Image (cartoon, rainbow over all chains, first blue to last red; front, side):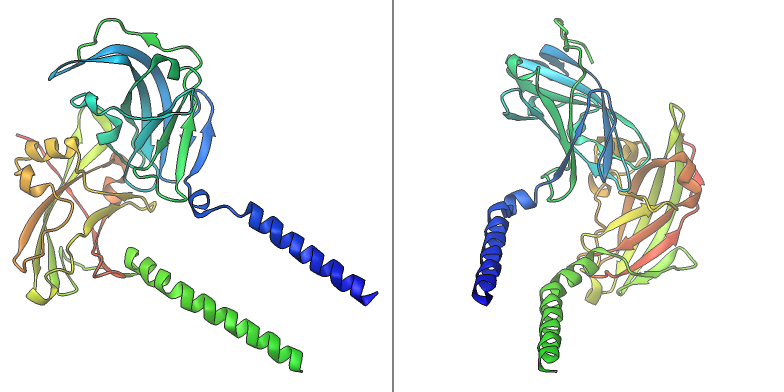
Length: 177
Length: 179
């Protein structure tokens, strides 16, 4: 009887250890930022920042002080309102496309005012910003905006924000800024 | 009795293991926090052998943006040669009464504001106080804060080598009118 009990305890211990080892997240997974999903039109709040998508549109070309930028795809422009919560911070944005590909904000929009990737968010102060992505048009519908601190620090908050439900309008003529 | 001793030994080993593993993290955490605050009664403090003086403090309101104000601080640091590097890489941070922390503007807006204030932004708009060579240095910093916290601001000055020690100045910025 004692032997059976001992074997049962041992078996349980081995099973528990196996379950722990199988479900134990690796270092890369364990130290990811904590991503909160935000529905379209809602305000998202992370530990160091809050943000809201105010609107979005497409531009076939960007009109910049240094000249016009054209693309084989399109430029997706998101209008955002963001603020710091407890500490001044900068933000970075990625567009998670419909295919799952990840697009960083384009470096070709240099010279545009109110760029998200060059602005500082201050606690208690709303900032109106734009995030511009250059990407294939079929990556837009079904995609989402990922807002995070630069370099995605481990265990920090990030927001995966659904865009507005209405499709983005296309601005055929470059808008002068 | 024997079993109790084994349990005690296991507990002692656990505590020792936690202490040994956690000690470097504890030291790292202490280097990021100001735990020992010195509050000078004047505009001058000495931190790790470096004299820090607020030469000028001003507040500028923006007519188009009535909810926010610009704080302009001019800081002078005079380190002794032995303490020359102790403030290198430090950030002078503004704090309000609600625990919020405002870093100096180092973006396009900060450069524009320093230019409006007539400062040489190419030299002045560095977040770090330049105290590396043992000579005195003057640094201009601008901050953007909500207008309702202007009367409750403190300046925290510390560096990686001074923490957990830091100097906390109570600010009373004077309104500034641009020419």
